[in-house]
Image (tube, rainbow, N blue to C red):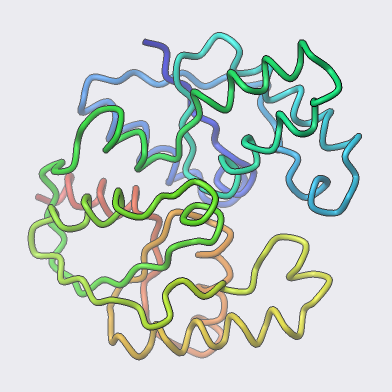
Length: 242
């Protein structure tokens, strides 16, 4: 099977180690990952701002980039979720609508692919730290990614999981929302960081780099020593240190 990595803008530009962790974890399970270099932004900023013509251009590039892939995996529930809007973008174009539906059917957030497609929950990792988890809005609500990360973390030796109070509350990033409504966004992430502190966790993990970047920035600004990681990073670190 041809498995391709949809890296997303933030991972490509700021957190390439997350993509590397995903590729190396999958390699341990016999999955060789392809990387189409023509891929670009999923178009979500334009889509959310009402610029659908611009969003269609980005979506067409993504559809073409992964046309020959059997599976498309991503470190972002948000960007994977955007692919689910592609059929709506092309509802008046039968050919592109069909191609968009095909991409939607074969696209998975990383933990979805690992647990639901490969059937892997225990990857043999050890991570002896107190960990809490932030479920991002798009991943948990749009894609329904809830049980998969919990199954993976529960199998990690030494990991002490601490539930995050009001975990399903938005972190306040919301893409362009953080720019347009900066004061409200700032209040929301401050509240989220307060709840992270309540857990006394050493590590915060999540599945969306935009959310993690937002929360990590607030924690660092306040001098809090909480380590913030994508779950793929935690799992890979746990495997290599086991």
